[in-house]
Length: 270
Image (cartoon, rainbow, N blue to C red; front, side, top):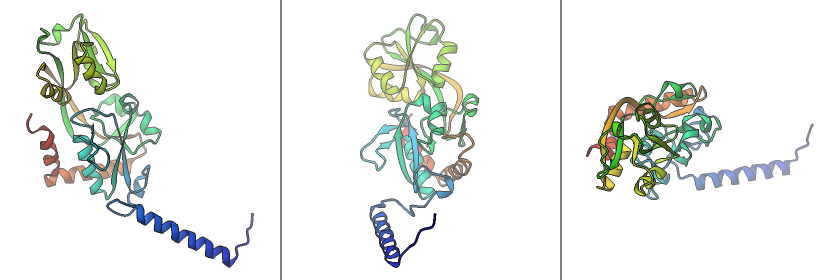
C-alpha cells in the first residue's frame, strides 16, 4: 500500500519523536546509554534482568535499601558484573525448579539465572552456565536436642529438602530410611523446621550456617563434600555473547580484588 505524506504530517512526526526522546532522557536513571547491551539480546535494553529464587540467604534476600530491591552474595556479585557491562540490574523472584530446569530461561523471562545454582551435567543438557563463581558443600541441620549426629541417624525422620536441588539428590541417595519432604524454597524449609514439622534440613552449607547463626537451638552436625560449584545460568544456545561477557567481567572482578571483597563481606566470618 502506498501512502501520501504531507509536510504537515512530517512536522508532526518529528515533533512527536523529539517529545518521546525527551521523555526517555528524563526517566533514565541508569549508569549509561539505554542501548547498552544490545549485542546481548537483553530482555530490556540497558538492563541485565536476573531471575532468582528468593529468599536463600546469604545468596539472595529482599532488601529495600538497594535499587534492585534485593541483595546477597549472588546479587551483589551480579550487580558488580552488570556495572562492568554498563548495565543496570533488575531481579525477578521465580521458583527454583522451573529455573534450574531451563523452563524460565527459555520463556525469556530474564537474561540469566542467579540463584546459587550448582553446575551439573544434567542441567547442562538444558542450560548454559557461566564459569564457576562459588564452591559449596552440602550440610545437615538439626535441633541441638534432637539426638541426630549424622546422616546415619535419619531413618524414620522427616528430612526437609528443596525441590530440584542437589541437596535433594544427595538426600535421596544417602539418607537411608528417611522420609524426604520437599519444599519449593528455603523460605518454606526454615519455618517448617522451626515449627517442628521436619527433623532436619539437608541443603547447601552457607544457607544452613545462616540458620545456625540466627538460632542457637539449631546446629550443623555434618557437611558433605560433593564438589559443587555455582554458576550463572542462561537459556541453552541463545546467549553466547552474554555468557562470554559475564565470564570476562567475572575474571576482571577476580583480578582486581573486588570479587574477594564481596566474598569476604558474606563469608569471611565462616
